[in-house]
Length: 143
Image 1 (cartoon, rainbow, N blue to C red):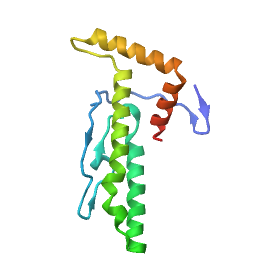
Image 2: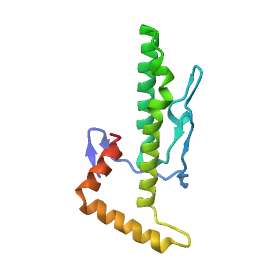
Image 3: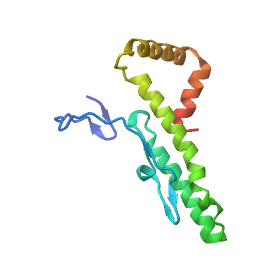
């Protein structure tokens, strides 16, 4: 049993099991007048790539800076461009999340054999190609 600064690991009963829906949604635009959406209100992203919290923080930071500029300098340009600033990053995260779903979850359906072969090729490329490893690392952390 592992011991660290939190004490020994305690075992407990599993209280719930269920499937996680791997769905995604994007609201466009994410602003209307003085209403600005952030986090899950702006976009839902599959948990497969762990991007939801990162997107929410990015949106909150962009919105906070825009609000500060509007209040302190009477400059509403950043507020007007909130959707234009955030949506490209949201869509990049969605693209990466769906790529991860395809990479990590087995295909089904009539062309499953073909999709499985593509998945094997993608995994091999990720294993062997420095360029693909860099792509993965950059998109996983959200650069």
